[in-house]
Structure formats: C-alpha cells, structure tokens
Image (tube, rainbow, N blue to C red; front, side, top):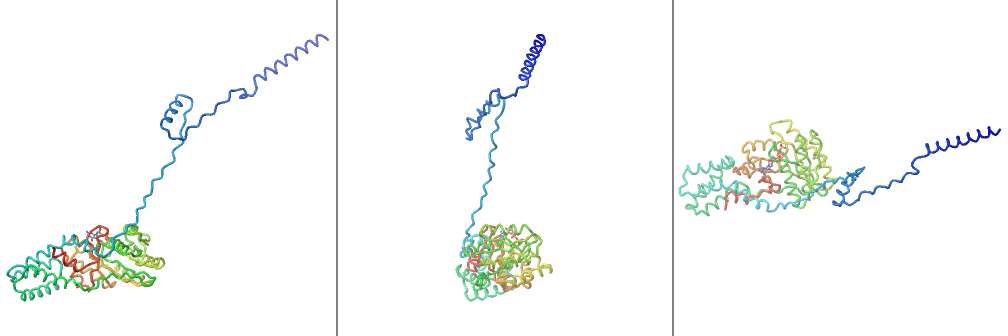
Length: 392
Ligand SMILES: Nc1nc2c(ncn2[C@@H]2O[C@H](COP(=O)(O)OP(=O)(O)OP(=O)(O)O)[C@@H](O)[C@H]2O)c(=O)[nH]1
C-alpha cells in the first residue's frame, strides 16, 4: 500500500511538471513584450531644414517616412477683361495717315499734271489714265475730265491753291459728300436692328463683322452676333472670339448646319435678350454659284419672319478692282444691298473704287477697312477721304 502511495505521489509530481512545462512553452505572446513607441508624425510645416534632416535619420534606420503628397496647384484661369472700343465718331480722322499713305500717289499725280502751264490733249489724256488706273471707272473719269477742262478754261492761269481747290471740289462731287451713309442700326422699340453681312470668300466679312461689333459697342449699343458661316467651323470660332472681347454673345451651330436656321435663332435670341443690334455673318460665296446665291436669299427671307433686315452690308475687297464691281452687281440683285464695307483700302492705291462702286450700284460706301487691327474699321467720311488723297 505504501508502495502504491509512493508511485501515485511520483506520478502527480511528474504530471504537474509536464503541465508547467507545457504552460511555459505555449503561453500567449506579446503580453510581456515591451510596447512599441508610436512614431512621431512628420511635421506639417514645410520647414526645409527639418525635412532633409529627418529623412537622413530615417534612411539610416528601419523605416522611411514618406511625406504626404502636396495638393496639386490648379493653374489660374485668366479671364481677359472686356474691352471698351473707341466710338465711331472721328475714327476715319484717326486713320487718315494710313489712308494718305496708300492714296496720295493719285492726288500728287493729278495736282502735278493740272499745275502744268500748258494743258494740251496729251496732258488731259494722262489725267484720264491716272484716274482710270486708280479704279475711278471710265464713265466717272470722262465726266470729271470734262468738268475740269471747262473750269480750267474759265480760270486761265492757276495758282497751286486754285488747282487744289478745283480738284477737291471735283473729287468730292464724284465721291458724293451728301450721300446718306448712316448705318441703320437703330432698334425698333424692343426689337433689335438686324445687319446682314454678305460677300465673296476672303473679302473680310468675318473680320468686318467683328470690327463692326466693336464700333457699335463703342457707341454704347448691346450687340449679338450670328455665325451663319457654317461652312468653316473656324469662322464661327473667329467671330466668337471677336464677340467675347467686347462682351457680345455669339449664336452658332455645328459645321454644316443650315445657315438660315442660325440666322433665325440669332435674331430670335436678340429679340428675347432685347439687344440693340444683331449682326449676322454669312459664308463667303462666289457670285457665279447660283445655288449659294439662292441660299443667301433664303437667309434673308427667314430672318424677315421675325424682324426687319435693316442693313445688308456687302463687303468688297478694294484690291480686287473691276472684279469686285461684278460681284457687287450680282449680290445686289439677290439681297438688296444697302451699304458697302470697302476693306483693305490700306493695301491699294486704287481708292477710286469708292467712286465706281457707288455709281455702279447706286449704294453708298458706309464703312472702310484700313488695316488688320481691331479698330481699323471706320464709318466712311467723304471729306476726310478726299483730303487724304490730296495730301497736306
Ligand atoms: N490690310 C487689311 N486686311 C484686312 C482688312 N479687312 C480684313 N482683312 C484681312 O483679310 C483676311 C480675310 O478676312 P476674313 O474676315 O477671314 O474674310 P472672310 O470674307 O470672312 O473669309 P471667308 O469666310 O473665307 O469668306 C484676314 O487676314 C483679315 O485680317 C483691312 O481692312 N485691311
């Protein structure tokens, strides 16, 4: 019995030792480990001294601190201020020097010829040639030479001032100092005035439309533009850019859209917005293409469903001479041209086209383009024009 008790006691001791060993072997980990110190957060300041120092320290250690990415800097959108263009009054006087530069050859030649002591047939032929070369046209040239011959005979001997006065008077008669050149841009009560701009390709229609918007804004009017040149997407972009510069909105549609529908929408919006003037730019079209000319007639008729077309401006390139006159005649037949905008007069000595185009069409030159600058379009002034031809 004592032996049994001894064996039991030994077995209990062995069992206790085994349980203790197992406990030491499988006790839960972590509890007794030293707690990990939390890492210090990187400073928020962009202190350039502290940054690299901390990085070097970290590189030598176990981990690397990656600074939070900097917030992306949005590029500032610069909205150009709306420009305030100069008013229409006095614009041509301001551009007179430019006009004189291109036109004085005509004036100088005429003054020199008329100042000669003897005015024989040869000299009169030269005067005639000078006028025709400057695009005055055969009819007006003959009439002018006839008139000058009579006046010179009456005068007898001539002082330089008298010659100049004579020539000034004759040129003014031909250019027409009493023609009504007022642009019809007065609104009809709450309905805007409508200006339709037409012409062949490249004469400067879009540029003239943009410049005209500036002239009208300069005179205090609210303007809306219609980009009915749907052949070229770039034409609508070009027009919109002109408009944005002076705060004028542009109505446009996708390339290839019906130009008449753009014109209609522009006028409808002009009425809704109660603007003073709607200017509709059309695509350049050859006067010889019947389909395109018919389309232009449609543009005008569609506008007339909502408003009156007050002004149909034919844009003519002064450098194209007699060809310009033929274009003018065809356009006038289709859309009743009420005024001419003669562009690029700064680039030709043939200012006589002012005289011939008015005579051919019976329509006055109302605007002249004297350069590519934004404010190089001026209401035409006959006296400033003739004085620029004659020089100082
Ligand atoms: N020197 C000078 N250049 C001008 C004048 N008016 C327009 N131009 C230039 O003529 C070129 C043609 O002008 P646009 O307005 O694009 O002509 P467009 O008639 O609308 O052309 P299309 O849409 O192709 O029919 C441009 O380079 C203008 O800067 C002007 O009075 N003087």
